[in-house]
Image (cartoon, rainbow, N blue to C red; front, side):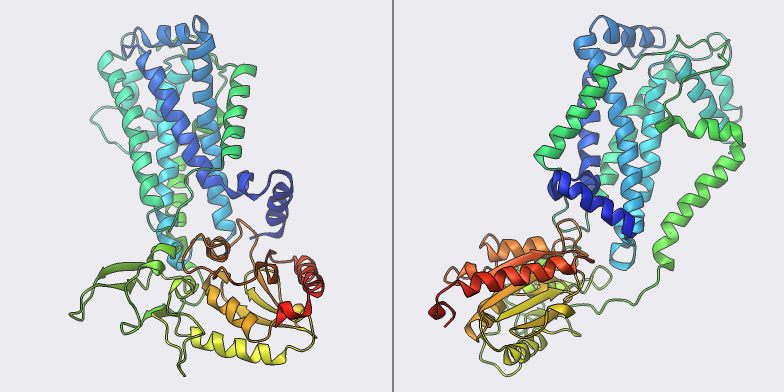
Length: 501
């Protein structure tokens, strides 16, 4: 991700905290705004006259006679739609900048592309229901754009020109579309997160309340007003537009309907094809050892990309077994970190886990840990388990400290922490990504939960927590990582000598 974007996100972290940082929760904000639109839209629909003659009058009545509720909700509805557009485009830009469209992320990326067009279609049709001059302009511009495709025997624009051109039947179609398109959008949003383990679809309470307060403040400070009633015989020369939703209309008139179709088509094809042309080596898929897998399902629950599935055993034995879907696997190793057989205390020469990475096995991790422990000397000594995606850890190795690198912090079974302390380490520092920056989404969160005993496999209660520290330092924060190491060594130095025995 570009450095300026990362710096800006971290600045907002200092102001709001990662959990309430809007840039780290754009997807969750999108879901929140959808439900705000649904709730406010249901009330407005109940009070809305769906006839062509009464639509404008009913909206005016809500905005003026019942401004304290209907008018405020109308404004909240409009501003939530604008915010939804902004949040969606920002989410798209952030995921693209971070390269989150390759290989195991391709499904989420591709399934998200149609949601952009469904969002715009829902917003544009919603503008028509007011049936003022803006609505007529938008409906006429949309009809001119669709006429290029030659879908009907007669131009669609004829439905919006002349006295009595728009009847109740056509207006009922508008109402149907404004209900049907958001339902399709919701279904698409559900599909969009299906290959994500533990998707974040709800923002923190602080962020949700902040967003709702902003929408309410905007509604009270600048209530939304209708333009003059729609008059098919006359269109004004100047209109105030909602540029967040209706920007395509001026763009079409500045170019041509055909040019706008080309722009939309090229953008759609480019976004959908982006994962196919993305560079990078394919990850080495995790593999299952049937003899060592007991079908507990912990790896299924912890996989960030729903790449591990649980099903009946295929070897005739009772119970369950897991399967790894290669196209979804990120090779992060979080599944190996969740496996109960991934413990270094097993008295076997070759440590085989129920599920493991062929190119970075749990056995190799135990071997590298033993080598690192052999290099520790003096007290207080610290063993560092460092995520490769976090701050660089090569500067942390030195007298009294050694580093064991990990692809993701989540691939570390908690038993390795206890093993390191029992085999001579005075303390253990776990260096992971900052909250919201984990390259595999859940690595740091799962590790923290396992160490706290809130998730299996957990760190045993008899392991002294004063000797274990988790440091979340992103790329470029090497100085902070070094400071975390110094603080742990100072804390260990203050403990009695027999505490490290």
